[in-house]
Length: 468
Ligand code: ADP
Ligand code: MG
Image (tube, rainbow, N blue to C red):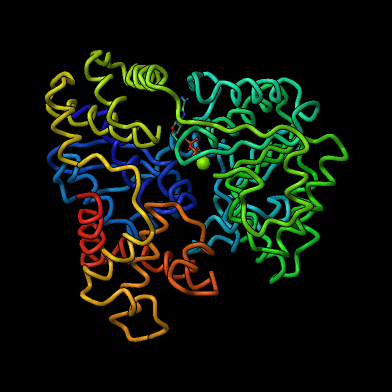
């Protein structure tokens, strides 16, 4: 079965259910090699990815395939040369001499030249492009400009042409799934296309933090600093997660100054403007607005239609106008969701050999119940408590009983996955002072989601309740 849309659809769903770091490391470099009644063969770049997918994500993959109409239980992984080649552009650097780390993203912020070369680390020889954290899927070419993002688009293009000369730093802010990461990555890719020797470093603030913590632990602060302070272009995504992290902010402050003084380009994104990021040091806050801050909005209806048409075009599908408009009308807050719905539609139609039409798309969106825009943290906590038949007071209490701890962790997980709250905020919502509890809880539930059907079902049920 030739199903080009199937794998993007499966990946799209998986992307929503696991952390970005895990997705980029384990799923991004995969492709579908074969899919028929007998078996599904997934191409992977190396044995580490194979093992990880087999051990940790087997049931997630099977379930997601099933949701997309594939009921084969036999899944094979094949190390595949094209997949390997694709990954070399986007190296996975494992840090611990090759053992697959439980936290792969940790590796990605320490200088690769100082890393022990894991079997699939790609060390950088002189004269080779350096593209830390960049994904070549994000380019200016496939970014649709329109009201809502046009200013950000123009600024990013200007920066890509002459990095470090104007709009430094560039600070992009706005809600989830509206194209911030795409645009910033497009700058990185464009800079490298022009100058393959440029050192472009893309990092999420959470990776930066984790790297900082590791560097402290392994007494590698000098390496850590060197790594960031020698960038030509430093892109820090979702900087709001640095809120409250004083030591890391201080480190970032010095990195910022070093780069800025030598006219190196800095690009930062956040879900809110600098003035609204709580517990951000004033000196960082003031620096963030030195250059240019741009408020990105969800693109308007016409632009959403254009995005859909373009994305369908890349799958060689011409989307009928009524279908396009239906999707653009029903999904108004988030381009990632819009893309997800399109992928699901294309996969559905392809499997059945039919053309997309209004009946299918409305049935599909109706079935998955389009999500209302405003779900509050309070609602999530209430519904979670209700599901587990405990009281809200208990979930917010300090009690450590197992049948309270687990619902509390689930609530934290849902706050993260549905509302994209920062860990400190999640901790506060549950009456906790220490945000590391929130980090551990979310990670724990993420893991359990992958191996425990009960947990997955519970979370799905709670979401059903929330969006019903
Ligand atoms: P954010 O970082 O703001 O949360 P992303 O950059 O990750 O959002 O965008 C979410 C998805 O939507 C990505 O797959 C991205 O390619 C796509 N996307 C967002 N805006 C556009 C656009 N204007 N044109 C094409 N694709 C877009
Ligand atoms: Mg983003």
